[in-house]
Image (cartoon, rainbow, N blue to C red; front, side, top):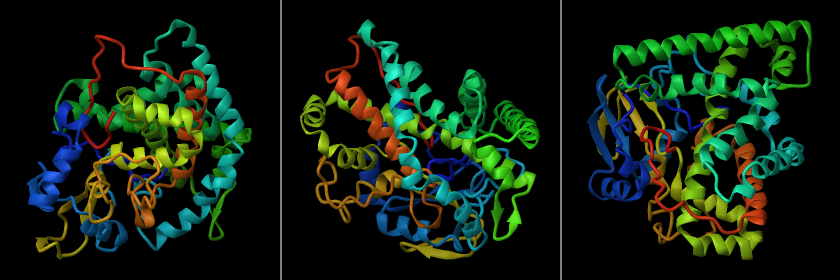
Length: 395
């Protein structure tokens, strides 16, 4: 899905240097940045860039793609062409959203709730009697991955293959053990990116012969303003969907369940007052912001918050900083499951606001509803250590 949760994991990513401690608790760092230097220049490896940590300037960047573009210069995942619709700016962007928005509309997502509920409970069945679980391996990774693969009509028994593809593109340093931007990491990332196109090209060949009731078959017959989607269009959509669909809800589940494991009062509140769950999810999205920042590139010389930015320079709006800005959120460091209003930016903002936000919200709600019914009390196992990965996604 187009998502403000997908950003390049390359040498130009300013959050790649985030150490595990900062990844675990980024909010104090965001506060320091807002207070001391809300528009901060830094070396992004490939050149000068600017970090935005105040909601005012962040919204300016998100809402003006004609000045702050998310094109291939902003985000490099070794893709051959722009990922659709994330790297396509208006006005062309609008025609792709007209096709994709109805697919992920709330009414369509509601049709999936019964099967998603069943998936959650089947996963819980696999470990509840043991009394412990490897949360990532047995729940937060397989749950949204199964939902997503089912939508695309891809085989669930190839999940490991898809996860290798996804991690090889957005976390090549973790796979290779080499730094972002190194030849080894870049070469591996390119190899995996090429394999994604090859895989989906082969699957689309199969769907041309035998259509199914899935998104891939739908794309083959879809039109955008009277024109059929080309094979390249569909491949560019699939490239983005693979990355976004297999990672962002997983990271959200990781963040939220760790928070509840460490804050039993909030967990008990959800068990005793299940009606506040939708509001609680919004507050956890605000506070945790699993995707702390996104990427843009300046399309013209511009000044933001008194800081001159030159055409071609990278700009990184820090969504996590916007979500703890006291100018928008009273008592921003208070986690209030009844916070209202809650205009957070966890799904980004402007034209590129996350396409899959309705699906993500529904998956998170169902996961919590079913888990808390069956496992109302849980904690991190004694002696276990939670280690956070830095970068553009906290997981």
